[in-house]
Length: 215
Image (tube, rainbow, N blue to C red):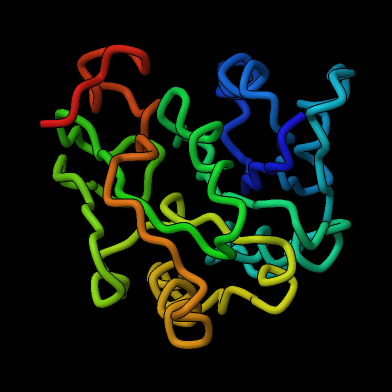
C-alpha cells in the first residue's frame, strides 16, 4: 500500500460503489468522513483500504470543511505519509498518485485540475463550475478563486498543524494561501493536470477517466 491517503468529506451516497471501484486499484487508503447517519453506506465494506471517520457535525452551512477538520482532529495522521483532499465527485487522473509519490522530499504538492468538457446546470452541486482548467505554475498562482481543494496534497507533519476555517465557500483557497504563506519553501508545484474536478457530475465530461483529454 502506498503511503497515501484520500480524505473525502462524503455525502453523495449514490456514488459510494463508483468511488470505491475507482479507488481500490490505486493501492491507497480511503478515508470517507461521515456523519453517524451516513456510516451505514460503509457497513458492508471489509476492504482494509476503506477507513471511515465518523463524527457529529455542527456547522451544516459548510459541512465539507468541518468534516475535513474532524479528520485532522480524530484520525491517526502519520508524519511521513501524504494526504490528498477530494470532493466526493472528484477523482485523480490515472497514474497520478504513483507518479507524485516519487517526490518524497516535498511536504506540500500543488498541481493543476481539469474541470471537464461542459458546464452543466447544477443538480446536487452548490455551484456551476466553468469547464476551464485550473492551471498552476508558480507560488503566486496559489490564491483564493484560483485553486480547488482537490489540487492539494499535504504531508502528515504539515497536515497536523493546519485547519480549515469553515466560514465560506472560499475556505479551500484560504487554506492554500495559508500553506503558501507558512511553508513557501516546502511547496512543489506540478503544472500538469493531476485531478478531474466534478468527474462524476452528469454531463460534465464527454469521456471516461482513462480517455479524457485536456483541452
